Image (cartoon, rainbow over all chains, first blue to last red; front, side, top):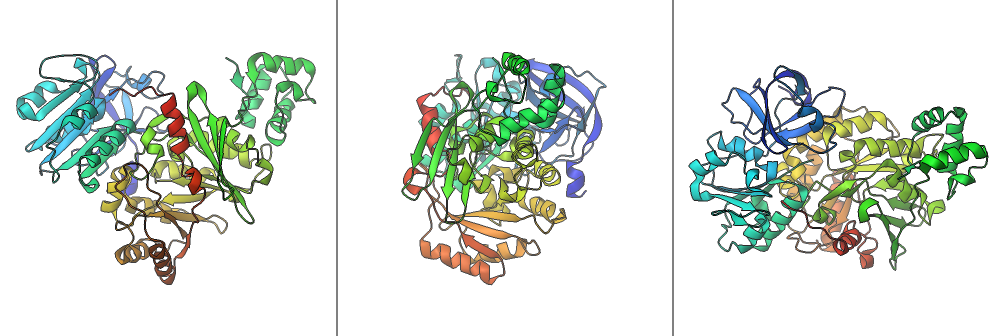
Length: 221
Length: 346
């Protein structure tokens, strides 16, 4: 496949749309292409419209491709996506991007739906040696938590900024990181979330002596 | 709240006048008042009937905004702060030189791209600018009459706000608008390929690419976009475009000490840009708070430039301007934003 084809859009049928938390949805379609865990696809409901990019949240060996998205109030695309039904047609690109998982030890740091590429890496059997730090506003923001808890155990750290619960750090993930004094300087740090989260987290890690070359960021846009 | 007329294209103005039952030629008259004259209220549109002016005023306002703050450098550079909606701020830097005067405009409030060396990135993304808010930075500039060039190199990534940027370019370059030659305008991007391709086909303005390293792995460390639209694909898209004789592409290259300033980088730049008719603008990095990147020595910048020129790539060093007022975009507005801060929760 050449690069031109990679960004071309083709129609696929929706398999399922599920609201997993208030305003948070998982949309799935049949997998047509191989991909690397952490890659993105471009999605639109109308080929003439500018597509939006979403990280794939499913594993590389699964039969379907899942994406995780939050409903953006008055958002051009998400307001349409939330009304899709099984069998409806959407347009997607082939998977692309280089924010991809490896087998080496690493920190995965995500806020909100920024968990998607790490979910893909997780479901692609790349969780060994990983520490996952996930930030969310509410207790229901920790998508896929049962699976993460089962496999990662103590290495799955949840930071909740607006609600309390035992075993969950109360505060933003950046507050949690500020309290960490034993962050490895040789691990890679993969960040995914909003620009604010990525920039603030990166600054904290650099301040803690992590070489910037070990910090790899994926941004939403 | 009344809608703004400023920032509307001729087609949009035609829709408005038809909806209001006015003759279609009124749209061109309104465009003339909006973009060719400096009026401060709809009532000044003298060749439009009083009745129609009143009709317009009931639903619309001009939508112009003067700068709220200015900082002046000892070298003549001026940084203007414009207020947008919801107490947010954007910057425009006016840079006079011997024969030209350039305005560096913002296309977004903040930025989503998260580049490691950028101050604007520190405030995250606050919102999109409308075409009117982009063009207003030019129109409401006190030195408007002296302006020779506009560069979209202020806050934000222009191709992350493509529709409004294209609309602003249409207003600036159309005969019914400002009637500027697109050759006076340069739009800069970090390389969002699909939007860049649309821009190239829909506008004739010049293009500048923020390059900063010829190596994918190094670029990835300082520019997250590399993970989505890698450099080889970006260069392929540039090579595949039919560049006319008039249209220019340049590469912006901020030099960071011991990161992207070696002979290895010169060699690789020459290799990857081979066959692309372009120039490189070298910029000295001015450290921002907390940045692990360092500023290079003057002699190293000159050496780097000479090496690239020797390889046949026209390379110039862009003079640092407005250092005493931190003219690099983002500092002034970040400060203002902090004064009105509402922390982002995640």
